[in-house]
Length: 415
Image: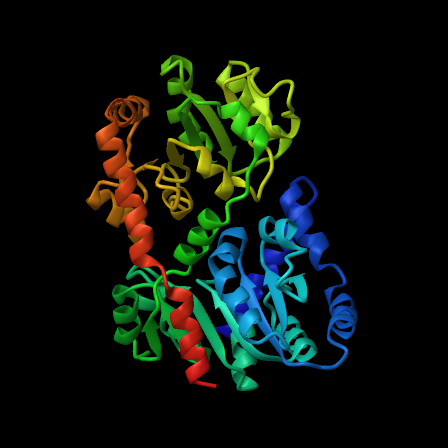
């Protein structure tokens, strides 16, 4: 089975090389891994000449990095002598956080084939390894197990539909034996692990709550964005796809004339942004072009960059989180930490926080443009209702903080 898995991963790498001929993200993925072994040896020698202990954190993409960031920073604070290696699978993580101050070395994770995994681990010689939420790379896990290197999963989340819990999942289940400890988000995840024989877990919660709380507490001001917003209510579409925008655009065209709109598409490529501007059909301002002179020239701002959306929610009155009309929604903790009521499409049930907030009345599932217009209108027209919903969001964040402290306490008690 391992040979088949490795062959599939190898084929995936070949397909990405082909895709890189015409896809910018695939091109970054390939370019970032070119000559990785020589570059890594040189980087390790430069950043860790004294051969200090190195701890490896891996994040699939930017969202997982933000989720694990509180633990990385707490670890660095508690163990300043330890070198931290941070790896990314996706360019959307690496290209934004390649200069993150709390990591001593930041690189792309080489493709998970046996030779890469063995060479990578031989070069970095980690004393501990942390995977954030998911990314189960089985050749890496196998080599780490061979070398008896402790492996931890942060904010792990499991669902009964995953392959680990299916009749065909025996090999995948066996690979989990490489993991020393699972810090799971909830009781359901812990019970699922227990059902397949893994008792090595504790419920720590979701470290994203710690991260977004810190963002709100130490928020960065954006004077030009504030000028654009003025005193008017602001609707933010965060990490949107075309399906989400099809719900928002009718409200832009026919909705409240006092409303300002900020749209942050999931894909910020020039082609995608141009397509969005064309579909809106009204004067639009791009974030890359905003200045003191033109900040008030339009009621619609498109954020054509990445890495700032989590801070922009401080200006929102309402927010629609993208992905709910596709595979699943994106991060809703980022807006609710500012007390912003959120909307999203029907595909949200993979995320406990979304289910919880819909039940509590702090978030709203919408099905079409008219549904969004009616629900948003009710909140903006009824201040008492708005403040009640906002309070539900803030209270939910407060209730779920503390995962980072639980993880660090466990690690300190098991040194």
